[in-house]
Length: 254
Image (tube, rainbow, N blue to C red; front, side, top):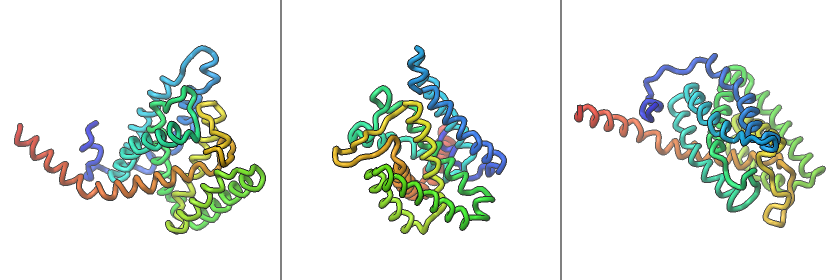
């Protein structure tokens, strides 16, 4: 599928049923992809990462079909953007390390799937109709997580992430999207570290301490979400003109 087809604004809107199916598929796809890449599978003589490298891009393409054009642009931008983020946080800062000491091919696509799933959940009618309740319930959930991490586990990295998250919520007026993303990221972090796909450094920068995984890790994802949305917002107005010019050139060549 070509880029101009993916981002065409005259396409029919994806149905609610289609979006719900994509949301429902998120959890089992994560289990499959991370389970295939797990140390358990590797120790039994099979490198299942190849299955993960196939599953993530394929499901990402399927996920694009459930997004509106402007959301597809954000999801597409998220793939290279998260690859850059993985390079910095994993290979440069070494906050966490993957099983083979390099960032797997499927990971950037996984980030984009995660982001897209958050968008879909946020726009569910049940979430929109109960936005206030969802916001306060998730605020209480995250407050309990951060409180336990700081007071019980003495997770100083999550404490810093928590400060960053509070600032973001204040500036974004507590949008449920960022709170929902926190839950989704926590799910992936728990599954990925349990399967041994990656492990967090217990003493980041040799001055902090954290758990495996840190409950506040999602703050980095939220920052990435905001940056990608801003980039897409800047690129969005130019794409229709680029596509029109491309179509005009194609017509002339024909």
